Amino acid sequence: DPHEIANVCGMEGVHFMIDNGKTVPFKFHFGAPSCVPATNFETAGATLDAAAVEQLLQRNEIIYLSEMMNFPGVLQKDEEVMKKLAAAKRLGKPIDGHAPGLRGQEAKEYIEAGISTDHECFTKEEALDKLQYGMKIIIREGSAAKNFEALIDLLNDYPDRIMFCSDDKHPDSLLLGHINQLCARAVAKGIDLFKILKAACLNPVLHYKLDIGLLREGDPADCIVVKDLTHFEVLQTYIDGRLVAENGQSKIITQPSALLNNFSCTAKTVADFEIPAEDTSAPFPVIEALDGQLITNRLSLPLKINNGKYVSDTKNDILKIVVVNRYKNVPIAKAFIRNFGLQKGAIASSVAHDSHNIVAVGVDDESMCEAVNLVIANQGGLSACSPDREMVLALPVAGLMNNRDGYRIAADYTALDKMSKEELGARLASPFMTLSFMALLV
Image (cartoon, rainbow, N blue to C red; front, top):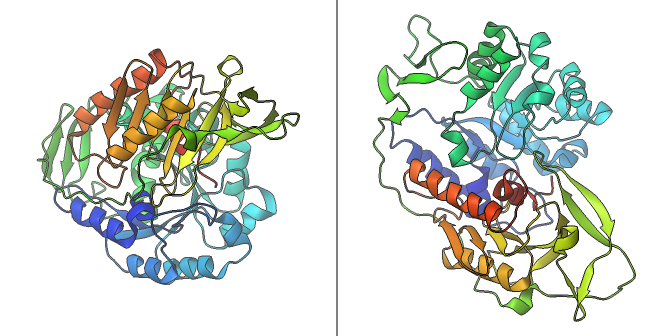
């Protein structure tokens, strides 16, 4: 789903992804982003209206309408939303869902609008509610959102309507495996092997009508060879009969790539991050981040005040969080968040769903300013700053991706993650991944 780069670079970004994918012998299948921007309450780099979405859906490489995050728009029958859904139906392309927590009559109406899947369920009860109305459930296990344990038992009773996905996964996590990891974990729980393989290999191909071989006569020779049916260690990967990976090493030759970006903000000053303390007696709304989940809680807590300004409170783990507009120079949006656990410094990221402005969290304005300015100077990236040193992983492609080798990026990311935890004190399992979702409104 190229909606990340679409939010930054619009139609040009989607075409860039499709064209770049054709430079290697890999079968990429794309969706038409349905919600660019995700909401009207934030600033994105582009807007894709219904006409643009229909234009994308007419491309052969686009095989579905990407996750419809605007579930209020579906329920309220928003005209633009309805046009996008109608275009997908008219062209016979399935529609992905995104409706965390939606239950009962609202879930029924959302599904009856033609939306066929959801990967956002975080409880078994929610998934069962959606299954009864005809939806298929995609069990997600990513770096930040982990729903496998809560949902995997559904595979016993609904083998035809369950699939697996990772949604967002760090490069270092990908080195350890992907869907094969979920298969191994499901086998360990005693679930029938053929139900597991159905969810992993067969159901996605049939649902999305993918041009991928299923070991039938006349099919493309697309298959993997695994060491056993317990751990699913992949020994070889074949695409169209060609050996493209063996023993954990890709045989696909990396092709040079152009750099596409959209970054128009300038460096910030420490004063830009300050929050004057006004009504000092009233509790302040504070975001509560939840480890292993994308959803958050709302708290009301007293804030620490220093020299007439609200500041981070490391003792009570209430830290300042900001969103810096990357598309134009406007005042910074500021708030407070709990559960990141930083004891010093700051971290920042231009991967900030879904509009991908710059999001940062830190213990003091100086560190936050430094971390944000590192991202700006690199025209995108992930950064960590302590009083002693700084580190940045540049993301020159739309502020979202790097065009270097994935193994090198994984090593660089591991070092950055290690610094955020060991030097700055971050307590979350995936601090950068969790941070990237704190600006997501749906």
